[in-house]
Length: 402
Image (cartoon, rainbow, N blue to C red):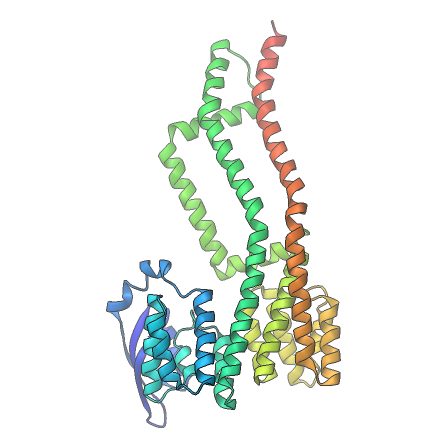
């Protein structure tokens, strides 16, 4: 939701604006990070509806963010002011959400604010990595270069995400089709066989009784079944997006033999690319680790980055934390980092690691369908076999008894 707010600094500096936040407490927390104290705020009812249902269909996509960073970089390097550049982008974009955000950013900058501070008002659109790199670009006078680095980071990260999703698309479709066929069999085929068994008075085995029980439930309580199905899917989706659900799912994937190597390679690529982008942009190593911790999704990998921060503060090289976590990050990550620290070419080594593991992810996702296919065949065969035996066994018993 969006809030119109009024805040002050201890020095007496005042600020008014519109900021996106989960609630009033979250708004106060975001302003506090900018050294402001919230004085008053009001939920923007005019935008409330826009940012609920329509936002689902009109959110700021990855391509919109790349469009923003690349085009603004070109205009800034050509000498166009940031405010004017944002106005031009606002006229170019067809995304209503991005258009409103760009308008708000333009107003914020015209009032004396910086682009990075304005972007912090939209944490769901601009990540901490995005904001930090823009901030460093502003401080060093290399905003154009920082925006290019951001766009490359987003593209690389999106490419990895697409490859993983693409690898899971085939098995997901097969499983969904298998479930649908099973439900159709229970609704249309089983009732016919059940009527035949009842007429002949055949004694039914337990497996057949279970299938008939499911069939009766689907045919006699269709609406209840659909409600239960909807509630189940919604609950699973909500749990998967919750912090606890992400932690559980992350732990399962990390220990599941089929997905564990891929999870480690994805996190190695994402960590290396994020650290390389941030450090090359001029972000302090401790801050770079903190931001990368937000980029990495799995709690186990977050803990390694937190440990690296603690080690650096104690005077221990960052690479030592990754070497000690060889069960999560591949051994090559820690060793290459160590070489980079020793030679003063940490950024170069991180970029090489990122490229290497991005290629590894691409190769692994190509082979995943080949590995998953026989497993799916076994599962489908077991399901079909169970159904066939359950339906044929009573007939066989009936024929044997004649």
